Structures are given as structure tokens and as C-alpha cells.
Length: 259
Image 1 (cartoon, helix red, strand yellow):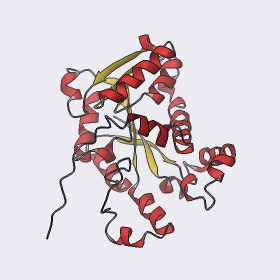
Image 2 (spheres, rainbow, N blue to C red):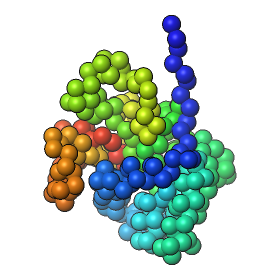
Image 3 (cartoon, helix red, strand yellow):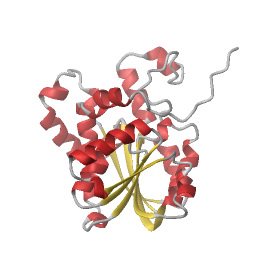
């Protein structure tokens, strides 16, 4: 009986342009940005200019949005190609002075930063690409100041299962959500929200808030409405995505955690 290959942390070098077109430049990406910005900008900590660490921030779309609002961003990622695109965009927007860039894995950051910690740490769509996501939670704890906040977004296993049942992918679900031929831009390890929250609590975090990201978008019967009715769809996502049961149906879960 053959054994599956062990998971490795995912690096998106050589896929940066596809990543942009398949995610950031779609309605999926627009809703994600809208939800995260809404959640973050409601934090009292962002009422004045703040130092923010963006872990695994890729091409820096969210980091640049926050930099444009006056915050100082430290953008990190394992992919040099992603960071190069972020640096080029920062220059185009006149934000280079507010964006520090470091190529590093999450695992290496605590040592590389020499104990430096931030009042706000972002970690979005990273956990599901790591071989050891549980360890990442304690590593994030080292990067945030006491009393600070971690904004953690991850791919929701429960919603992944639900959507595949709706699509009729019964064999895939019965196989434990393990694909024979994984798609390179599909998250390699959807995570149980209950398990992630348990890891966070074990690392000393308390939960400030939970939001679903794309609670309705991915379940539309007529997918053309994702574009033709985008404004109405975004408004409904923002209206209901912190209420249950909708919050737990998001393809991604966004947790705000207090250290």
C-alpha cells in the first residue's frame, strides 16, 4: 500500500502571476479584501498610525491598503517573487517608505526579528499551506506584543466539505477531502475551525471576534451573479458574515485574537 508524501510548506515562486489573476483579481479576492479591511479598521488600535507585521503577505495587497491609511507595514513572505511584486507596487503608489520587506518563513521570523514584537500581526491564508500549522500559532504568539492582536484567516475545512457535497463531489468527500491530483493553487490542508481555535487558546490567545469570508459567494447556483450582482453580494456578506450560522459557512474563517 503506497503512502502519501509528507506535506511541505508551500512557496509560490514561479506562480505569482497566476496567483494574482486567479485570486486577487477576482470577486473572491475582492470580497476577501472588503471583509478583512472592515474587520481590521473597526479595531481601536488602528485609529492612529500603528506598526503592523504582515506574515506571509504575498504581493502586499492588504499591506499597501493599510500603508495608504498611514500605518507602517513590515511585509514578510517566503516567496521572493511575491515580495518583488509588492515592492514594485509600493513604488508605483508612493508607499515605499511605509513598507519594509523581508523574505522569511514564519518559522524563522521570531529569531530573525530578534525578539521584536508588534501590536498587530496579520497572518492570512498561510496556515493551510504549512506542513505544521499548529506550530505556527505559537510562533505567531512570539511576534505579537502582550495585549496585542493577531488577525488570523485560514481555509475552512467544514465549508470545503459542504461545498464539495453541494457540487456533487461525493467520492472526494468520502476520500477524506484528499485529491488524487492536487491543484497547485488549491490549499493543501483545509483546517477545522474548532481545532484552530483550540490551538489558539492553548497558546494563550483569547477570541475577540469571528467572521466568515465568502459565506454566500461560493454557493451561488448561478455563478455569473458573482460578477453581475457583486455589489449586492458584498453588502450581504458584510451584513451577515459575523452572525451564525453564516459565519461558520465562510470558505475562510477570520479570527481576531488578543494576546
